[in-house]
Image 1: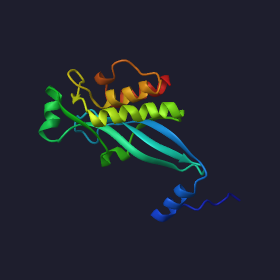
Image 2: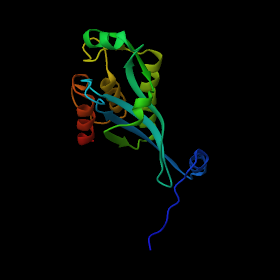
Image 3: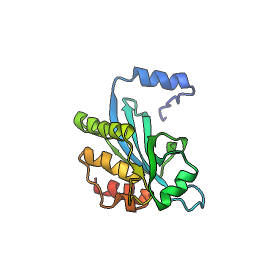
Length: 171
């Protein structure tokens, strides 16, 4: 007879599993999703920071992507020129189509966090094609490079799903 595993059914159960975990192995995940529906949008790449608990539960503590600041007109402007950008978490980033997960050393983890702090305190200009600015895949590539990972050429000129898939293949 197969062993039965009780699945936590409440937020309190999940919190208790997290709090009582003997070990929390940190990871950095490089994620990408296709554009939902037939919008013609390029999709999105972003970076996740989290821990894997001793019971195998994966907890994403932060998901960060680089976006045009302000939305609306700024999103359209980002296609044709540079606009203000911002590093932020958005609800759409709880789903992805491809993931490269890395279990970093302490120094790699700190290097990744350092890139995030730099982009948070002084966000570069955003441009969808990263010609006169940077885009979401360039952010992911800078985090990966700081960690010493192999990074494909041209992160800003590829669809996010293509870029993260290529990075996954070479690491």
